[in-house]
Amino acid sequence: MKKILKSIILIAGLAIVASPQSHAQVSVGLSVRVGPPAIPVYEQPYCPVDGYIWTPGYWAYGDDGYYWVPGAWVAPPTVGLLWTPCWWGFDGGVYAFHAGYWGPHVGFYGGINYGFGYGGSGYYGGRWSGGRFQYNTSVTRINRSVVHNTYVNNSFPRNNSHASFNGRGGVTARPSKSDEMAAHDRHVSPTSNQMAHQHSASQNRSQFASVNHGRPATAAISRVGAKPTASRTAANRTVSTRTTPSRTANRTTHASTTAGHTANNRPATSHATSRASHTNSQVARNNGANHEANMQRSAPRANVQHNSERISMQQHQASRAPAAAPRPEGHPSGGGGGHQGGGGNPGGHHR
Image (tube, rainbow, N blue to C red; front, side, top):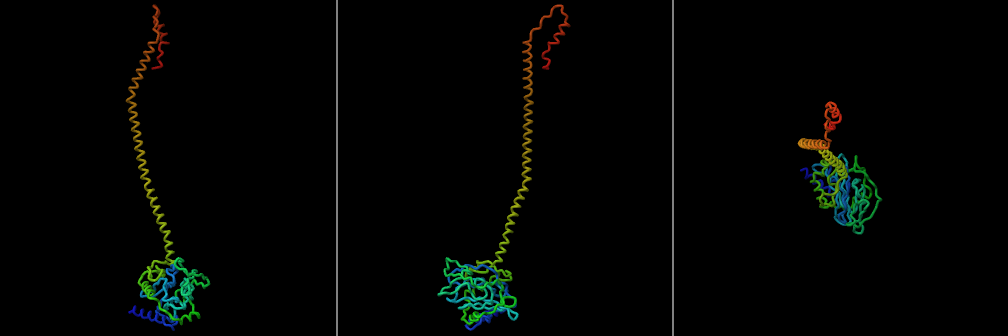
């Protein structure tokens, strides 16, 4: 029943907007007691088709609260029409929704700064000329390989407000004379594609303020009916940038962990080196013992050879020594023995 009542109110509001005698300020389709979130900051997609007009994103209201309808490029119902955005107005303790519409002039839209040519009053993002739409490239993103009808105009008022409603606590703008004149133009309701676009947003949970906290996942798309893969909000880009150092930190942590593993492996490597050194020392000792044993086994042969050499040397010296002179008869043996003792032992130093 609640959904049916809201649908009736919305249809009634659109019918009022479509009336030639309707005034922008009374085109109310829905009213709630809680104000909408601020207008998010986002990037505008490039114009995909020559002749399309930019319709800014806005906060709509459903059973689960406010949800963001992404901005999109839209084909106007007919040549010569411009889009007047919807807006919320606070009055009498409630927030009233004023539906958007097509017309030959841009009417009052609450003084809300939607950006991209909708600064709060009028539209300076483009104009009709000779049956063709021209784009002001100073505020509109244009792909020059697709769109060639362009001009540059920087003479327009700047508005830095992000308030999403008109009234106390929001924007305090009032309709100008040109806005009042535009209110009496013949107005055309949003196209069926625009209504389908809004319905699609109402079915996407990520578009609800209760989920995204005023930072919709999809703030704008290239055109109505296109897949929502276009612009992210500036807040989402900031979050993405902030997560980059965390990934870098994770990489650093991984590197530190790897270094830690390497450091932990060093004692094992040192232990292996120590064992190898111990093994080499043992081999060296074994080799030394074997060498010593070999030397001991070869020592007797060397001693035998050395003794043989000594015997040969003694025999050689004995053969060269002069024969002892015959002792004269009657010579006392004591005297002769004393002389031999003094010079008859030349090999005494070889003992």
